[in-house]
Image (cartoon, rainbow over all chains, first blue to last red):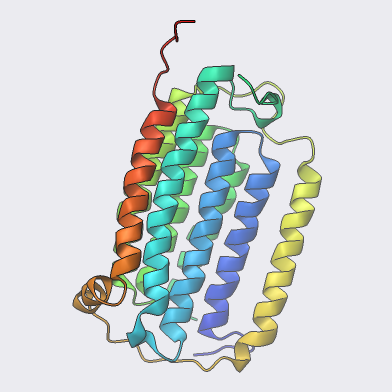
Length: 108
Length: 166
């Protein structure tokens, strides 16, 4: 099964790390607030992949710890997405833009 | 490490890259959906059926739709005039590359020390349900409260505010 240095767990962890870096780059590099939220979602998802991989290859999968953590994390991420996108829509209504460089007033 | 894993990893990473790099916001949303689907398939490949289907329901079913709604409501489908990347894009890229280098180094250094189960865990949805209403009932209640509060909060934040009389 294992080829060279990589075990299955290492493969999943590397995919998660790469996806986390991509999400981080998206959140840091893009101008649009919605793209920043997409980047944050990708980062949360890569953390979930870590949790599930450790649950699958860890010593006690019947305790369901990693699985439960991932399920609750999915629920919290859904709440975060709803509130974040609601905020983006409210900001767009106030200042008529979603470009982060142009949102520079705290009072509408 | 088989062919299926590499295929699913390529779909996920490709979707993520396209989501971050594409110019048009609607294309970005579609690429994000591809990345979410790839992750759900990776969960299924890891014998986590419940988490995989929850991922499909929550992310492809709800979050992707929310993102498309937000893009169309904010007229994000129009291309901005002065580029899609911020002025300090190089710094962000360097930070992300550094984070990936550190994470990959840590994974490759330490993963051989972790004892690894190779047999698929025999966990059914019934076990997950029993755990949710047994040991994890308090977090479940808190998540229910959080989702209620978040739904009400999102509606209030995004609701059209009427002009207040002065």
